[in-house]
Length: 174
Image 1: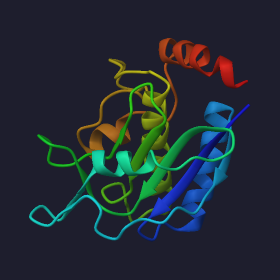
Image 2 (image 1 turned 180 degrees about the vertical axis):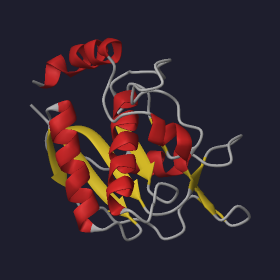
Image 3 (image 1 turned 90 degrees about the horizontal axis):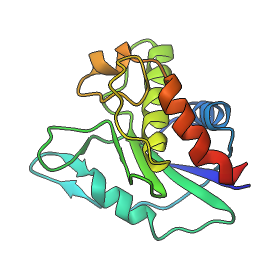
């Protein structure tokens, strides 16, 4: 057994973090611990873009170790980018331990939509940490999202094929 540790940077509401933790427990069957991790204020900030480099945030997470840690997920308020892309909703280490999700572009006047979008991106990025790659099924949470329309189109659930792969990847933790 192990835990997914969740932390937040940049003023994420506790309600969103707690709801995201519940989503992770329901989706992956893993217990979640919310942990406070300090974040250097300008780490990864590209002042020209006024965005934070997602890979730098992922690298920063590597230094933290917690009892029975299975995965580490940071939910952040600020805008993320990766080289060659205007922005990213999140990023993860494929088959690795760490993931980051930004709510910056997921916000909607209807809080329910913001929460649902966040759950989708959390599940997507954690899926990557368990070795899942992008899926061609547009409804699968593992389908690639290049826009909010893409995020809104998919569900927060894994298609049958991705569910099978995920179940196999989760076996050692159950």
